[in-house]
Image (tube, rainbow, N blue to C red):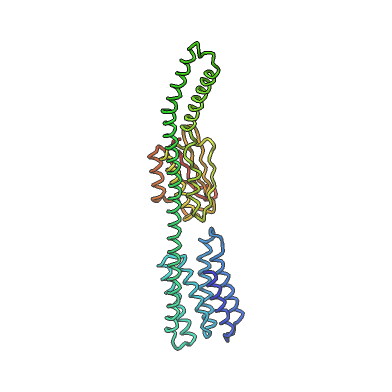
Length: 358
């Protein structure tokens, strides 16, 4: 879009050279202002978009119409309106774009008729066709981008869920192997130890060093086996870090920063899933509504509770309205005996604080 706009502006500027205007300095000044406004609408930081973008589009409209008025004969100045309409279709709702196109083309018709064009309606209709084509291309590009982002979010959800399920499956397999070791190998080692103890009571074998060594090795092996089973039963819990990073990996922004305490262990898949869905909703809100570049997730253990805190570096526009996402987050945590609060920080960024059982 930026490259196409620059090429179109250059073509319109070349057309100004052949104009026989009495105010060439004003024409070039307006063309330069249009270019600055066009670049501002595309290159300025996203957090300024809410205020800068409408002003930039309005400046472009005024400059383009003023150039049509000052240079009506060259026929290139109305091309700048095509670029403007494409921008409107990219960032504004359809009803706003249609209304703006109607106003712009009524003004274009009046300016061309005032300049003495024999067929101002024909020229205006021709440019309306160009504008409609540009608007449709921009609209489909915008739709494709939205679909891509939605697909990225679904893909991130699937990756995180797969990581969590794989970790749960590994945990279940560890538990099964631990039970088998305890029930089968542990039982047979215990029987072996008892039999060696009985053999040691035989006076003919009591003095044999091989028997003493066998008893010691059997006892040590049984002790090692019990320690291994205990360690397998008390693994560090589900791997939340991998699941959370998988959740954020496909998203271009915001970046995810994790601060998870060393003593945090989550063994319950339902609790892990609730944490995952809460962070997912926070990522979505930060990208859509706050224009955040970074999301910080802190998960700490306080006694028998887990405390989750999520902050972003964006800015919430207007009061917080609880939609389906936040309502679903609240219901999911409440079902596990947890609570959640959604506030704004001192800088206006969104803050989510939740507690749930450890």
